[in-house]
Length: 319
Image 1 (cartoon, rainbow, N blue to C red):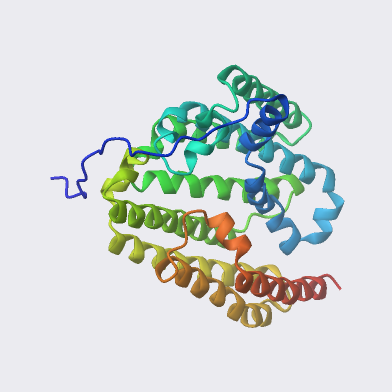
Image 2: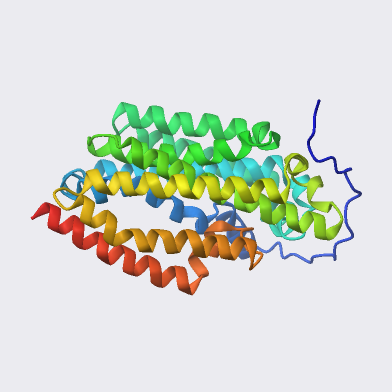
């Protein structure tokens, strides 16, 4: 028997009319916005394992590593364009997503299709110059995420699992590009951290849905299978698992000072977890994890100190 939260699909909310510009500069700006440049920071995960575990190999293999990064940026932007094409009608029901270029009408469908084609072609060209396994990983990323856009995004728990898998594939591709040993602890830590962020986003959307009388389910039907209490529990579980994965990765990846590095950087990792939970449960944040994490001053300072201590340990392990 299905015990999921049942919320009836509401009528589209009355939203204020948005006047959009369709001049050439506006269309070009809209096409650039379709690429989601603010999300490109996620591509940095391609560099994570090589820079922390083997910076010498990262420098020696900088060309394939940079190519892998560019391939993932193009592939992820292609997924965003495809998603916006498919969901342009549904996005018009959302208070903020209705402002996206396709939903608002700034960019027309043929222009978006042309952009999508160019991105896929560019990704294919980049992959011809990269190790074959990188091509398999990027191809898998595209296939899984296109399936996500078509169907999986509406399956509770499957949706957030697929999103998190995409981040793991970024890390794995960077590892393969420079030819270093795969670190399972890092992959597990990244998966759990990204799963927590995705679940936190669902929590934010569900809380907004309950406050507004259910309108959010028209945009994301999978929310009907979640509850705020359930999401609070699973976010915490995954953040704890991410912490364990991080400690295990640092412990074995920065010899001979791995245990010391793990101990010195743990307070920064723990603070990041605590601050994120505070933002989600007390501050009602979490709707856009990338924006929340980038804009929060406390997290910025913490990240800077964390990177400084970890960087010293990495340099010490080289010398």
